Image 1 (cartoon, one colour):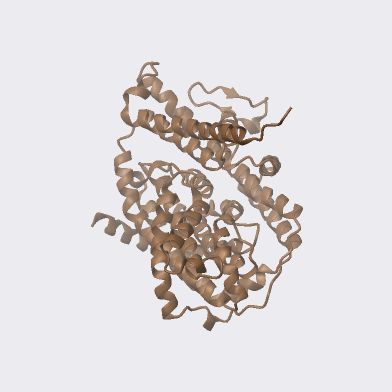
Image 2 (spheres, one colour):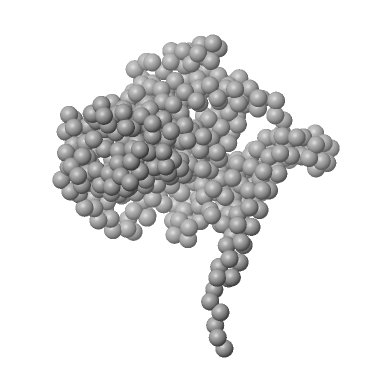
Length: 506
């Protein structure tokens, strides 16, 4: 009952014209960026993050989260119509979505995707409503050793999840932690690696770095590519967007299954919506009445991944708010927004700033209802925007990034930081080095150092404190396994490959 009352209090804060307006702006922006190939939630959150800082915390963070949710909806549009996913989370939607378009059923595919996205998002948010406060109430008893171990685990988990061998992922985490040491340390007040520059005393600002690594990097990659789209004739009339009762009956099971799997995968650090959509698609195919139709235009093949990636978005935000562990790269960026608003994600969020936390959750319900309306009513408009030429689109995004970063502190140094990180991100992407770990390390680095020092102060310099605390020890053991398993698995594959190599006759 307490949770319901808190949620109603959140709705009282958000159900006013201005908060709803910013949620609507985020939902529209996210859907548009999700629908445009090459962009996605990371770019949207990066570009509009400076705007969110000018708003009250609940409204500003609801804006960013609405972009995230909207991009999950929007990714299906280009996947279904032009066989080009708006972002990685919509890859599996192409498998059956585009075949439906070639059969003249684009409207049905878009409608099924929109309805499944709504149900998946709704189930994910309900889970978040009841699970997050419960998790936070348990975590409130955690001290510095436990929080240190949890943050180390989140860094390693997201690095391993974004890189199959873990070497590249972990190296990016280490690089991010090194960058996080720049600036003035908190215990003795000494400056580190500032090279005499007053701009470096406060360290590297997260916002310019994030906008550079996601916004500017995406612009550079988009300008480098020559995207050729083949758009065939399809029906996008409003009346053709609603599936029949028989279609609704067919998608009920895969939609619920995808929603549950997406929520579970979303809670896992670093797993992300892409993995959720793959898992849901495979599960839906295995449990389908007509599995042979998958890949040829099965509406279940659209419903399962769409419900999963939308449920995953809410699931990824749950551990971020309760423990300070983001479940995805976008959740890590939103976590940075919390910190900029002087809100510390973690157990104390629901104690010190419970009203803001519940307002944000209420904003997610509002966003989900607005998104289903937007994604059915404005499909024709989004379809026409998909045809915008990339040479025009990406320079506009680049200009918005520069304006947004400069507007925060009116500092050219911030713009330089953004451009430098944009170049770093570009070459990392080209070399297949995952940037999510670097970004999360840059956000958590200061907090990791702080909790590590606090732990040693409590134990009077003894490292035993990380072993005698069961929760800390448990997380450190799991972290070690996360490092060892990919290395062992890679070595085993290498030995198998060597064993299967043909023997040359002398």
